[in-house]
Image (tube, rainbow, N blue to C red; front, side):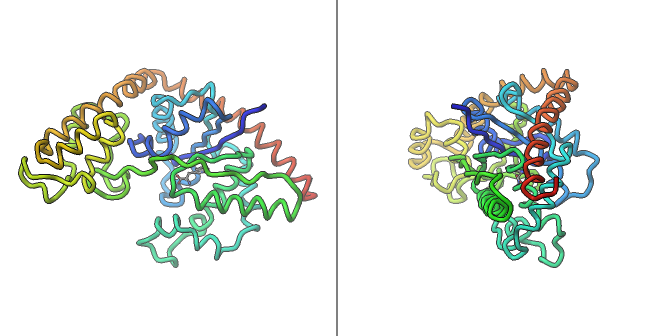
Length: 326
Ligand code: TRP
């Protein structure tokens, strides 16, 4: 039986942080063995929040280096830029006729993104970016979409658009399923629910051991654990969430040490630093190798684009045919 196809993407905002890894990349790396994998660099999506395009290509390369350094294998996973395959724009236009603006305004992920923004100030392309995402997925007939929880509403809209298209013009698209990442969100170093570059609360996949140490040192912990021997509450501590992810085998020991007061925050943090650095070491090693051969990275992307173009053109042929536009 042929493998099912997955499609997922990320915005190229530069080097990735461990939140990207936990929320998406880790899952992609696991799934590439069982699925035919398409991974898109969502460069047009960046424009919804930043019109300056001068760094997009560089940022895309940095992101792809992190993807590969962490374990995404270009021999198994197709890697390509959204902007280089014109069919994204075309399918996006067609799909934009198949969904109401009210439906897009109800999207909870969009609401969260623009929480500080008055709807009056929202650009048209931002309101419609989910439609572009639907085109990303359906252009390659992605059957499953490995994403974090925040992207599930987008997959739902994609399903609705696929249904609407099929009913209106004829069966071309299958409705894709979200494939949820179990551990979808990593808190930021400041305790914010989200690790994010704009909040400056990240640990990068490329951070050197000393940097990780400095960053963790400043991370917030249980505010009621003031002195070393005070009993702490792991359930409210950010560092404990990192232990759960990166020091899984010792979680119960950390938990009891914290609760009894035997384990002070500084020691606890240093144990965490050690584990995170162990995790990052091979990634940093691989990154350095790739940094010495950026052309090889560019070639991987160009190769992915050549292959993606063929699939995209074939889907658009079908679309044109059922729409009698061919
Ligand atoms: N919208 C996603 C994000 O902001 C990125 C993305 C673009 C994507 N196209 C996609 C994710 C297609 C999954 C499938 O992170």
